[in-house]
Image 1 (tube, one colour):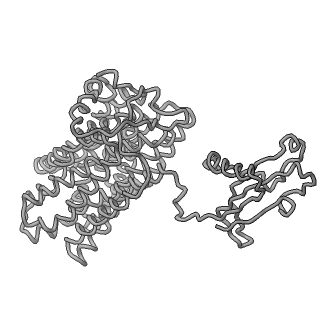
Image 2: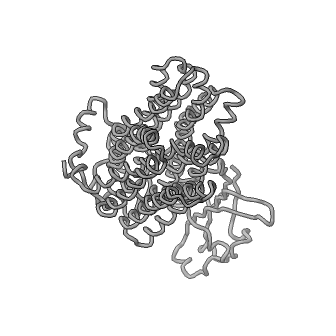
Length: 539
């Protein structure tokens, strides 16, 4: 660090002082200086110590050149005291220090770093989820699997996904979302990388996919816990949309990258490469500062956030393994199931998952068989809904947060967003079910629009868990997501059964989804609530 002695009579930016008793000493720390005259930027941190204050009060104000400089609050306690001690010792020399501002994200708040890395984990999450849907074709040819076996392999993911939801929410509540998230990412990444070694042994392959489902199943609750701990209400919609929007980015990325990787390097490459990405994420996550991996302290609903709007960050000591049974009993399970808005979240989550999972699994076949698109066209068209969802998510989250910041009731905002998320796809599926003589690409555009607008749920249902109870948000999401995983097991198979029985896409795919979208909307509008709830007192 370069040190310079600066006195007011030598400083071109300060007025000359003739009275030695009114001398003001300034300590200036410059953090960035660009010498180009057109881009001259000087970031300063100014600390002043005044001698003979009674003689200075009458002096003129500082010139405008210093009027825009702000005092760095982080330096007020320690640094200023050291500076004043230096003055009191008789040393009237001021210092200018040039500090490094690298890396660029050095000054980014820790909560934003945590949310960004969590969103990246969700990108990798869906890349590992969709890679098998592409690789299953060459794998079936190599190992001689029929459709039933291939379906069994793909559905095994949802077994682990459904089973891990509730335990994942509870573990996130006990140990903190950060710890659960990093273990979940490591679990599904290692399991993904092992698929090529286990593909020839069916029990091992199914077990590996179950482990992928378990690792990815605990992640939504872990992310919900992180958001509830770190993000204020006014930023919550954007945080949820940014994190869970990573799933759409992951779907698009996986569907785009998997085919060329398989074509050039074999189907094994997608499991090796995608698994390595998760392991690399886990290694980098260890160096990230942020939320400690200890549970939130119990607090009343009206104390769930500070006066600034940020969640209460009080924590307790880490729980030991022998204390887990007692911690499990402390969760107010009865209070959850006696509260009607919780049941509204459960049913709404089930309805949304039915439409999402059945369309995710069957739309490529619908595009190919019903709209007569070839396989290449059907594959590219399947990317359109998650791609459009990325755009819609950003708009929905901004709208929701702006409404809340402007004083609109939080429950009202969540109901508006969730209604859009359900009514839009129901309307678009109805149009697609009716024979209007539309060309295939118009039907694709209608369905893409409806499924993209369903992303409003990220600012509706998926924010309500944190709104209702930041302390138990991860457990609540574990409950609703457990029920929401059932359509992945039942709905996808039932759609195929109905299709074989009726040979009608309208009856097998669209009609059940429309039914659940509409009934889910009614239940949500009648019973949903985002008002803080103190479940701890209901045990």
